[in-house]
Every structure is written in structure tokens, then in C-alpha cells.
Image (cartoon, rainbow, N blue to C red; front, top):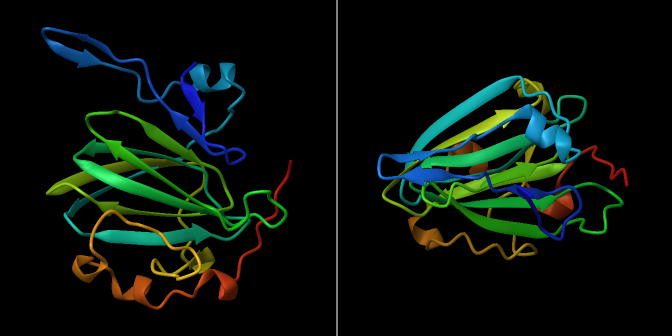
Length: 186
């Protein structure tokens, strides 16, 4: 089975089967049939890619409904600590933080459903991250939570004194003041 449950409803780790030999390796980073066979039916419409250096911290971001996005995130180069927070009102995991190292080496991917805030920190000298989205970017729907919300106690894997954070991300609210319209559908 290529999917590993995380303990948070609908949040899944995708671990593709890697075929390696003396020439290198091959794997399917995404195959709609594989996902569908596991009950995961998503139509991705946009791919995003970012390159960052050690200590860059991006997030925690989301888009409000009806422009919310499901994301499939992976590291093409280097290592990141991927971080999500469940924002779905009524979810048994509401406000819970989940972290996972994604790297070019482990080839794992995180499938983040709509209703989660998402971010990551770069743990290696550089990292290149790619993520597929099932909805287009919509600036007016942007929202987020500040990365250092004391209630969340996120360990980003880097000293926060060395974190490189955008000005936009420095003014995001804490979870308790975060406005969102996500509802958990069991």
C-alpha cells in the first residue's frame, strides 16, 4: 500500500515504490490510477515549485473555501520539515500539528487535504520543493497562522533565531485569532 496513515483524518503520507539499480532509480511520483485504487480521487490543476536555502521558513498558509487547496508536497532536492495544522472545525484533530521530514532521499510525499494550514522549514543547505494543487492560487482567499504561535509549540527543526521568514508571514495571527471557514466532513 503506497499510503501511510498519520493519525489525523484524511492526512496521508504517500510513499512511492522506487525501482533502483546500478543506473539509478525510477518511480512514479504521481499516478491517478494508483491514487484512485486507494480511494483518493483528486484532480490536480497546478504545480508549484520553490527553491530555498537553509533556515527559510514558509508558512503556515491556506486558502479559504471555495478556493481551498489539497496539496501533494515533496522535496526534489534537499530536506524540509513539512508542517501542517488541522483547521477543520469539528475535526477530532482540530488544532493538532503534524510534522514530517520530506527529502530527495526518502522520496516521501505528504497529501494535505483542504482545511489544513501548511508550511515548511529548510533543514539542508538548499531544498527544492514541488507541490501539486487541486485548485488555483487565489490571492483574496489567502490566510494563515503565525509560525511561532505559542499554543502550537511547533519545533521547526531549526533555531528560530536563524529562521528566514517573509514579512507577510511575520504578521499572521495566532490560531485562536485565525479566521477560516473549514468544516470537517467525516
